[in-house]
Image 1 (cartoon, rainbow, N blue to C red):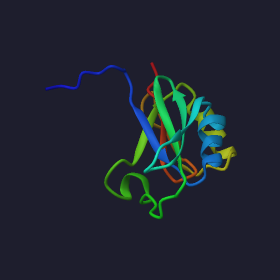
Image 2 (spheres, rainbow, N blue to C red; image 1 turned 45 degrees about the horizontal axis):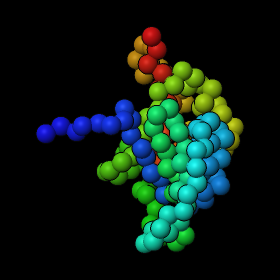
Image 3 (cartoon, helix red, strand yellow; image 1 turned 180 degrees about the horizontal axis):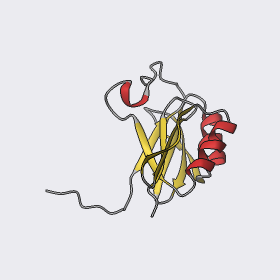
Length: 137
């Protein structure tokens, strides 16, 4: 049996330690459209800030009780599990520069991985990796 999609994209939930810094990164630096902030009911009380990246929704989650454990650092080589997500854009260099100017750690700085394919990877305020790619024409 195959998945029967009702939407052409996925939604991603990111539990954050500092919602103001994370919203500044995703909303202000990357330009994701903030559509709503809604309370989350128990047992995981907090606030879910929903931002749109194209048709994908990025859910920045601020729990009332911040979890004590951190995600393992180090991106791809740091641990198994979800390690990064990719956004296909036409302005890799500009986004990378904007992230750096905002204080984000740049892991890979706008390289041509193969002819026509530009790639960069930055860390969000919680150390999650965000990859920007431009596959070219």
